[in-house]
Image 1 (tube, rainbow, N blue to C red):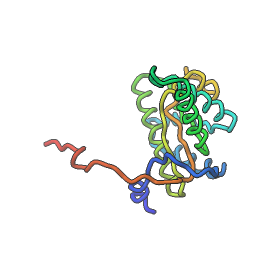
Image 2: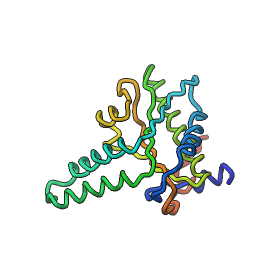
Image 3: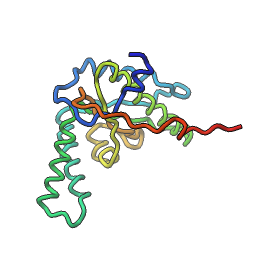
Image 4: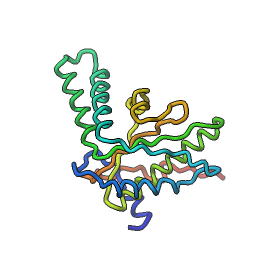
Length: 189
């Protein structure tokens, strides 16, 4: 595929086949992240590949989060079902990579480094898609918790978790949904 074909065909994958992506393949697709543009070559991105034991701990916490956010009127049995659904959801992700960004310098540098890290994440997604590997870029409560930082060995005083990349072979590929370019573009005189 050409670069433009990869860009237009890539989709966020929510359901993965259970077979894991080989470690060498994960390393290869992550290597494309370091080629993202970054102001003053700060190279602010950091990649933490989550092992099975850590994934289990994160899934247990995600289960708790799902139960905690249930509406007050939800009974204990249904609350437990919501928690179990959350647990299974996280455990169904063959590989999880936490992507974080070094936080140093002034507000402008932090903003530029965050943007560079996002570019690195897109590079990784596009490289993976070319090889038939799908991803979901996920953020949320789990990525903001102090316990998550501890489990991943990330110092929250120095790094910010931009998101998790859930990585695997797609079980299904969603149909594209995009606005027309004319709906999101303005031209000035």
